[in-house]
Image 1: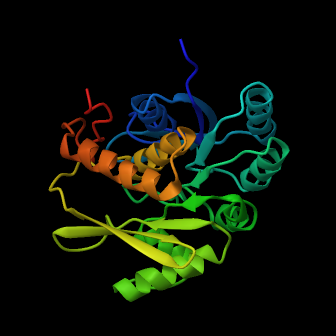
Image 2: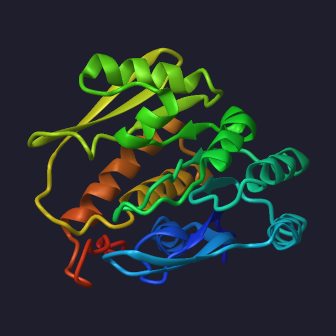
Length: 263
């Protein structure tokens, strides 16, 4: 059997399996990419709320990274929820030590239910240590407003926000339009001053738990498989749309995507 591309997810654990590490591994497998992981935090959550969070100690976060990367170096990797302020600097050290490439940064700040998943100090440390190393960052509109310090109301605001975010170091920006209004949603991909707009019809469903995690994981898997960033973004958006469109009701709140809808 031929070997498979390897992708790494550095994120939190989601007990209901719709987001975080669990979702990422599912997505990697759908793209025939072997998934590895480093856990940055444990949550007690369901489709309605996050009820608890358990921190990962610094020594064990480093131990996970060193143990994994000394044996298996991924072709692409992503970050999701980074739970503690020391993690960005620690992770930056290992990115440089093992010369990791194809870094997809999903700036998880709040959960779908509104729970805060990232402290202000942790966010600042991420901007300092991780943004300059990332190949693509994938904020939604609320996250883009926080990062860029711009209130987004118009398309011009979106483009300006992408430019402001890019000044923090990422090679490219995918500003997701899921929080926008209207029947047509638009995702904006910015790279080297050029904007590509991906339009799609809004799907009337509440089963969107883990959409951001799943989308960034799909981009990561496609980069690991050798695709260029813009094409990886295009195909990942198509995958996320299909996973939402074919979702099934699970739980009593924001249900998860159907990660295996291809089957």
